[in-house]
Length: 337
Length: 295
Figure 1 (spheres, one colour):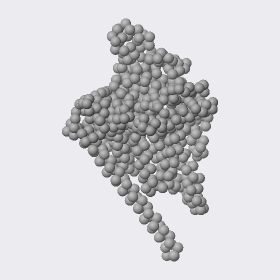
Figure 2 (cartoon, rainbow over the protein chains, first blue to last red):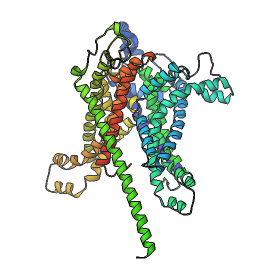
Figure 3 (cartoon, one colour):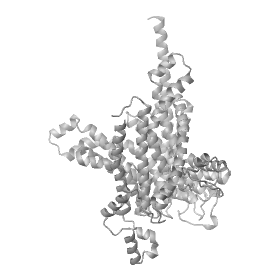
Figure 4 (tube, rainbow over the protein chains, first blue to last red):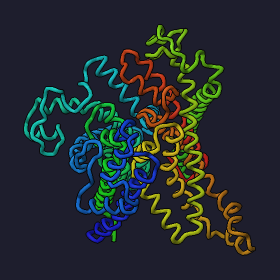
């Protein structure tokens, strides 16, 4: 197992390098002019200002050199400086990452619970009317454009009924308290700061529901398919033959085995959630990676965009590795060597 | 035949009858779903094609005195804050959104199929290099990468579509490569080599036809997500530029106007219904063309 982990870690290095190379190509080889984007049209008329800008950010050097310089900084843990805010990208990412992790994790838990339940019910009652209803709901969840759903929820539950708090991570009057993990709900829970905790949780509900809809259909379909497979296995027939109640057969034998494949798709699901955060976060003013990616991309702030891409890439590789290891641990039939 | 056997065969018969009924019910539901989906897609496509004839107004006709009107007989989907008819804009918007979605899948699948087929057929270092680059591109969430490319190219429909194609082809390339690897050493390919066929002729005559059907399956399943992504890019302001009507951009316009829900509501409904219909059709096509896949 240890050898497997080491080999996977080594194999992930070229992938990560490739990720930096792709983002570098996009930000440097495509015809966008960062000087115009950052200086504004007026200052960009002045060749001296433009030249000074290009020199300051090293844009006047050959592309391969620029890439090597970037990598050199990267190896030392320096992700560069944001052109728009002049702050270190690493610091800004560290500030926005917890918000995204909090949101993505909350919606993933929600998606696993709801999607898993729907999938089990649909699988056990396959081809019944309730199966058809659940499958229609799940298909709708997959097809729902996140940004539209987010806006509808805000219209109804914030503007209309006034049940949900305004967009943002916390009400303006509240202070998040001392950062421990940087996730407001978790930190306030650890500090037993109940007003902040409930407020943070309330702010989390709508964006988490929006993000979770992507995963509900995804997990529900897989769970349903595996439940159908498990129901056909010999051990389920044995369990029924020895006279176990159907409820017990389902919970003890079917559900436990049907949920194993779900673990393998968590990595994939996290990928989809990360993509969903760009739209969801910008609608709910959620100060996470997605909103950071969007705003820095709008400013053609290439160190920031590369930083986001890199962090997301590392996340991917790490999660997929963790999932594979976890899978081997849970399912003793799988051995990596 | 003993009594026990008789009972056994009766039980079996009943089980078979029940199974047949379940299959029939499933087919019936599927047929209903397919019919509705075809209808939805056909209606949106027809409206988009016939937009200049169907639309009651011009898509940029601003009547300030009629702004923010709720749906009525005169304005079926209401009017936006500039007094433009939302129904007209939804009808015209379908042209842009559907064209980008279908265009990206079409170009992406053809490009991906060619790259993947060549990669699988040549093998060796070329194959290795191509497969590694597809892995890297697929390690990004597609919209984040498409967003970065679209930003670098500057907003615009063509740029958004180009950005999406750059992100879209690897899935097809990998699929095509896998298919090529599984058939390139089959006897009929060896036979073509033996009778001295030229490599490109073997590719076109013997290999491509076998790759095509799985590519078509993936493309139909993929159409829905291409449309959502295209609309999402426009929603973020990276696709269609005002005053061009586009479904995603229209939803964005209405997001600050909760009292005028119809501005964001109807274009969003258009995206939702189209994607739902395409997803359903995609599943149906996969069930028919790909017997290995069962749901």
